[in-house]
Image (cartoon, rainbow, N blue to C red; front, side, top):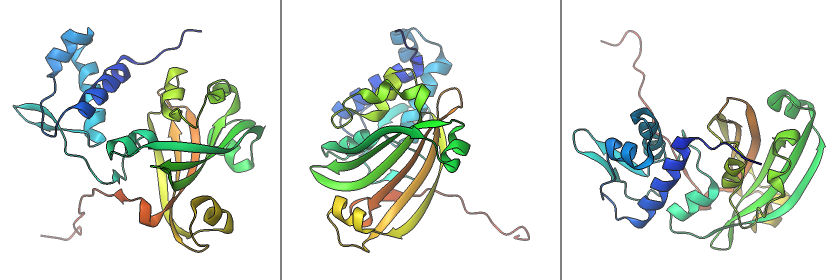
Length: 239
């Protein structure tokens, strides 16, 4: 079966591989050079680079070009990286342990969010250098992603698996909360019950805007962080 992968994503992945091999502040090809190399429009090349800018992997200097950014300790709240890419960017070795993978009827909440009657549930412990960082429960529309989730998701990135099937996670929304570790969290994450967790719940859409994934990630607060960039909104009567 032939699957569609957007051209900007192909360019983006190529640039990700290059930045991983370059030193901080090294220059990347210009947009015109990318257009010539990949045979795409300037808009497509710019879209690929912009995704790397959003992920904090590169930065732009007006009039000079695009450069490799120094490594960052945490993810920014406004951007989602695959866990595997995020850990590799930090110089750590990512892996996963699948603890549940099954097809079932959607709950009322899942049906509302994903607009389906049946879902596939994937629960994994996410590890960095062999140390558990998070427990993740991801729910997908069964008819759309069934075959894709048959892959080896302990060694292979879920993000890469979805993209290879023509489903590109593109945008979404998330909420963050602080919660105490349950008894099961404590067992899976090797922490004490009641340990503070950073809980992120997010709905991710594909390249066509359709709901693709509803995920809850429960991170050990002392092992994971999220940076927040923000603007300050002045009072309306401020002079």
